[in-house]
Image (cartoon, rainbow, N blue to C red; front, side, top):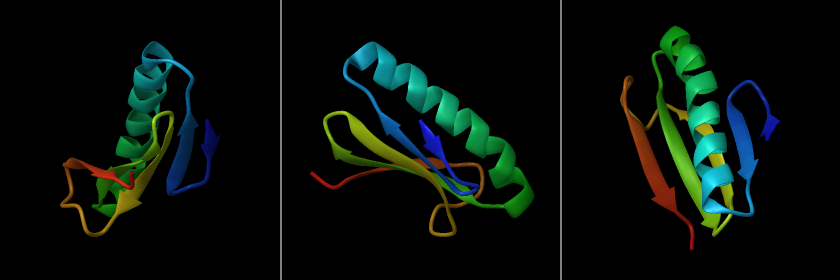
Length: 69
């Protein structure tokens, strides 16, 4: 996982690692989202590559998924 203040890149080789890393990333950003009153956007770039980010386009308290496949 690579992280900035508003986004975390997740790269995983198998479903178990993917799920664990995504849960961890969302958990980290939930804390930051509360302070900014932002939602969380999970973008899937391909099978094992994701970006989890804070988003003004997602209502506070929600997590949405987007696929760029």
